[in-house]
Length: 72
Image 1 (cartoon, rainbow, N blue to C red):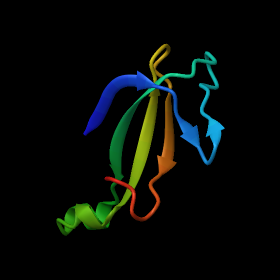
Image 2: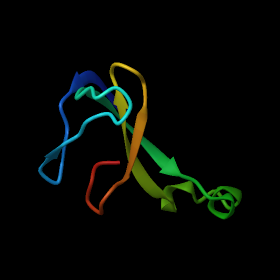
Image 3: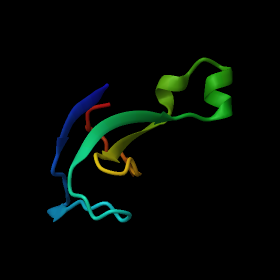
């Protein structure tokens, strides 16, 4: 799942800015943080989730662990 329209993002009330190019527009992606054990047993859905913000200018990816209740 992703949001392909670059947008300004706030994290806990602070604007997100790319540390590489200083851009303030990002697309959003989601990822599972897989472990070998859960993958081996087919339990990938138990892994933690992360939200990825991809800079719309340079492509740098910022990773944030998803808080409980966040959309996967």
